[in-house]
Image 1 (cartoon, rainbow, N blue to C red):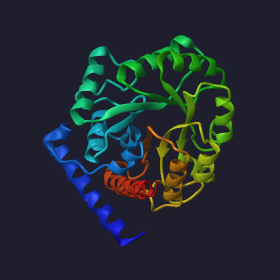
Image 2: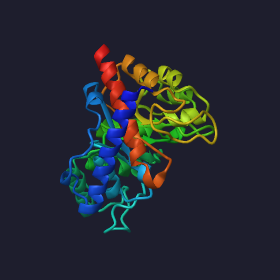
Image 3: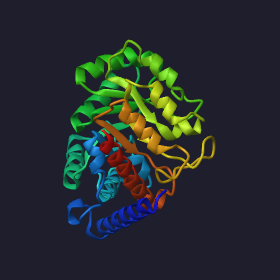
Image 4: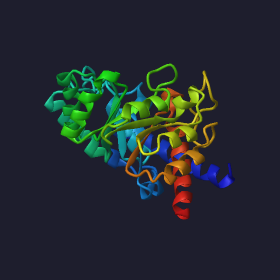
Length: 301
């Protein structure tokens, strides 16, 4: 990595950490400070970089929103079951949220300049009434994509609800031996189905399954809806997240392949599952690298 990348990553990290400190001192309003630069060059490519709230699962959803805003990012993916806020510790982010609490969540997001765009990983079944509750929640909250690992017999129900609610369902891969660890299974389940059903490409879990992320992206061409984007220190078991561009995943090659496929309006959810209590500086380093590579790719287009 060049010295210029190191300098830029350092400055981004300092900016994000400073912003987060101000959140802690001054409350939840993201507008109370100048956030980090985020990923403006990625936006020009149609790539929406945000955070999977699971990166901050030691914290409440409201705190996850604050941390996302401190990074200069404007998108978040919620996961089911996270505590809503310190003031409402018994309220969880899921379909059971009352209309009043949903309004509070929407107000918090608007206050911080963050959009709730994805929701998962959640269960979807062939039971129309049960799955409809998830779709109704997603539609009400402005969510565009439900990330799931549904049973094979659920797809007729899912396809009907995707068309009815005009929402996407992205099939997520956990590591082997989970149901969708192999992209071939994802493609099999998507065959002949609505284009609203596709893949949530988890690049880190591919690495844990000892699959090359670039090759899996190629395999899924035409069916990728969103990403749980990661870089790990190695392939296989025992691997952990590292700042993007410093690991074994070849982030630059992944992004080049994504650009080659012409993927736009996709959400890249940062799911950083390491250094849980103080991950923001490492995430910020990854954001800076991601946007630097996006700028390079945009310059070649």
